[in-house]
Length: 408
Length: 163
Ligand SMILES: Cc1ncc(COP(=O)(O)O)c(C=O)c1O
Ligand SMILES: [Zn+2]
Image (cartoon, rainbow over all chains, first blue to last red):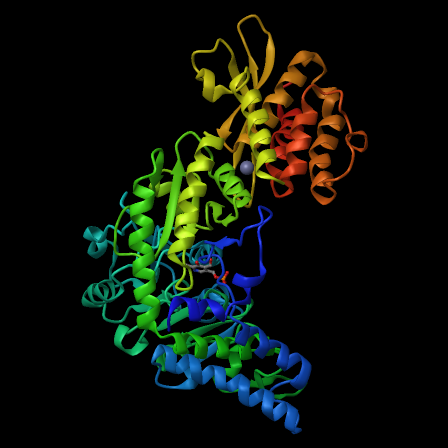
């Protein structure tokens, strides 16, 4: 698919204009992606024409909703190369998935003195659940350090793992820097020291940009968010490899996760239902399925070709802007750029860019330990996606030059 | 807000910041004869802006309020306006609590109705506060940046040493 054909599927590009009268250049894709019309249609079709609960009721509406809902599970299974659809737990997002691992597994299975390996590059969603667990359990957290170039310092990896490291949980692609971590290498080095270690991957920023294969990766779990993959907000999935999954306990109780309830006690449904209590975000899940079909239609090779082009063009453009400092300068990355403008605060940079119709984010990007490791408090971040165009990069460049004049 | 306005907003913020008398970052904390005795911190949860408001005393027992931290232009300018006002009658610092609190709130009122007239906004008699309020009206999503110093001030009033 050509970029122009892809863009035609997003009403946003035709309809939304900035206060300055020009179309908005949406460079905040790491926060959330734009949604193609097919996804929104699917969601509204559910509410307008189906609107039935799933897994309950024998009428045809419920059957059709259940079929579409479970269809998403199969789409995710195939997207991730999982062996069974029952290894996919539908969640409210990447954050939910990581918390589920902490509460459903680690809380039951970790004992005093056990260790968890994380990295300094993590989103707060992969730090705070472990901090919360530390309030209950005497466990140690270890962190792979980040180097100034924005990559993990893997020279010390072996010294951070031991037989007590029960779980390693880390991000595949950084939401702040775009750094693509050498996931396969890290996993094989960790397993060489501790073959029993469970690997949990935060695929929130990776899943829409490369073909993942959980079997080939050899991970125990992988979390993702639909809204970063052209899907609706408030939906995600957690892959749990069967043997790991079978060690999980339910975290929340209620409808859909039970087998039988008496006043004396409850018995539970099989996986994955046992981890999915309550009426789920049915429309969201159905929309998520459509988003995956859309991504498949575009194809990962197209996604990667366009993102590589945008990466090269934007990197070159940013390097030519005087007074602009890129935070992290490794080149194996997705087109996500954290930067500072000399003498200005990122908050001001983002506000002024917005006035020129460029949407970027500023702040700590939910990764304060990473910011600290890089020696910055906040940055402006431009994150591009496969549907962005080279013309948009040109407008970004012009706006940056005008912004610099204004804020410095 | 038009780009023309953005230009004006930043010009007015820069004017306040460049004439700063109370930014410790500008003066270097140690070169000043004032010593910090108490410090209140306010954080902008969403963006990570941090502002410290210092209660300082010098060898002649004179007191003042000054600020430091890592924050945007709007927050700096707002802090400067605050310090200028409280330092003009520092012996009344404690009595300023209710004003300080209502100014902090006023920025969020402006955020919700940016078109409110200056008369509807309180305390236009604080010198240059109106400039900050106009900036917030132009960029309502930044209300918290402007409020930060005033929040720190109410904390500082509660926490500073009283002899
Ligand atoms: C790397 C990473 N992990 C986790 C998350 C959390 O995702 P969600 O907020 O959708 O749960 C994000 C979202 O910003 C992310 O970028
Ligand atoms: Zn700010």
